[in-house]
Amino acid sequence: MMLQIRGLTKQFHVAGKSIPIVNIPQWNVEQGEKIAITGPSGSGKSTILHLISGIMTPDAGEIIIGSRAIHEMKEHARDQFRADCIGYILQDFYLIPSLTARQNVEIAMRGASGSSSERKDKIEAWFEKIALSDRMNHLPSQLSRGQQQRVAMVRALIHEPTLVLADEPTGSLDAETAEEVTELMLELCKSVKNTLLVVTHDLKMAERFPRQVHIHDINFNQSQSHRNRVTPKECVV
Ligand SMILES: Nc1ncnc2c1ncn2[C@@H]1O[C@H](COP(=O)(O)OP(=O)(O)OP(=O)(O)O)[C@@H](O)[C@H]1O
Image (tube, rainbow, N blue to C red; front, top):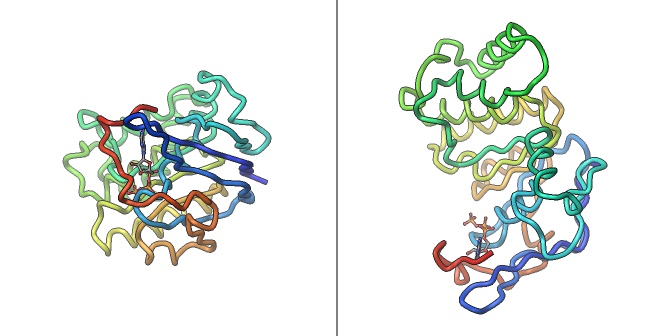
């Protein structure tokens, strides 16, 4: 089993009130599965990815990735585990604007094993896979949004993480580019055999996945809706 979640709960405290967001009694994901998680805005999808990646800690419950118990790790161990074993793909890419596409990927390879020429070959091979060999020395601002997301995918995948988490990866792309990026993401994850969990509003994208999960089928905290959304300045975690 790649991911096992048991009795996972998380609530946020806002303006003196506790708002339950996550309540997952049990959820299992097998090694190598590709899953699209759909559901309404504010239903806790991003929060669940934050808990799985250890960016956020739960109030209670267990999260086991492979044989590692994330919920038992101290912050430093979680950070290390995330750097080694998890790839994160986000809606807004977050490429560093002053660095070229190649340099953005090189950053993700700091500390990786192998000689510098092996690392160079690896980067070049990945840029070939995403058909951007001729754009490696371009700045993000010189790339289209779809190209930027392709570079961001390489940055997330080049260290071959066992688990890839993607939060609305096509959310800021037009429909045609979204489809291309989805296909490429599935293909790249298939080639390195990692497990992929994608949160998306895009039902067309979700249909491309062998397994689709509606958030309310795993998260039994169904009281949440967009009505409960709060602005960041009200947030106290
Ligand atoms: N740090 C925080 N403090 C307080 N409330 C929060 C915090 N982060 C998220 N929330 C609330 O938790 C709920 C779930 O948020 P989350 O971002 O996980 O939903 P989502 O399903 O990913 O939404 P979307 O599809 O719009 O991105 C929302 O009501 C949100 O306002």
